[in-house]
Length: 311
Image 1 (cartoon, helix red, strand yellow):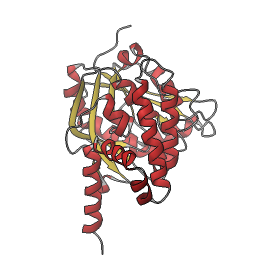
Image 2 (spheres, rainbow, N blue to C red; image 1 turned 30 degrees about the vertical axis):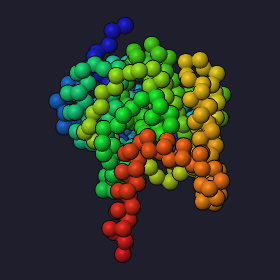
Image 3 (cartoon, rainbow, N blue to C red; image 1 turned 180 degrees about the horizontal axis):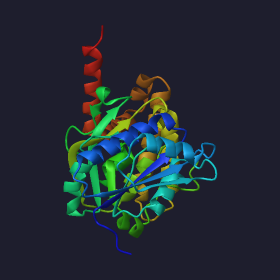
Image 4 (cartoon, rainbow, N blue to C red; image 1 turned 45 degrees about the horizontal axis):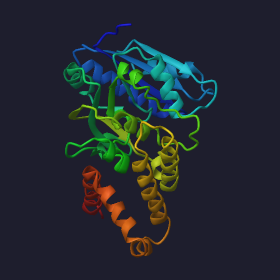
């Protein structure tokens, strides 16, 4: 079946996020109003809170004065998690391109205007620049200060793409490569963003980088990334599962599992003791950290702001 090439599906997993969803929908509406409306957007909201009626979500949509008329809402029979919800949304998508924006993120007013121009190149995958913020655009810092070099090694060892909202992928390409989020044997949560990036880059792929900052990724107290031990355990679990997939390089996965196990020991106890007792592992840890120079720049930027505004 052919699709309108000027169309994009935006999958929004929803879980007890009524206080956030309005911000996202308002930002999408404002951006669409500011565009030439050359693209036909489709919003697919997957309600993973069965106890919240769909009518409550419809109410939020109506209150947002959306210019986008193509909105679909699906409710999971029970809480299934973000990864499962993203797959459900992807299965229902009809756009030529697809992206996944979490309920607590939002977009820049130029989002659709820039995409109208850049998606004309018809690449299989696009990587957007954006911001990381805690609450609003006022406390945001840039995601990428320099153009990121995205390949499998960098994604595996440093995970430079923190959220699916920074990816836009051609829907047929996802289907051709059988790319998905949910793994039934995966118990831990919070690594499905990384799983997407690993699948996209395991074979050489031309990725078009859009340097304009178009999305805001909220990194607040509810994010899984704040639980370092949980995030590391989830990453190790995912890599152990992927070792059974012959399309992934097993030796590289094993190498990074060793590095992650050291990271867990490093963060959990006296850091200096592990620096001196495991110098090789610590050196490897630093090398992998340096694979993402933007992370280092963001770290210094954060430290500078803390010093600048210290009373």
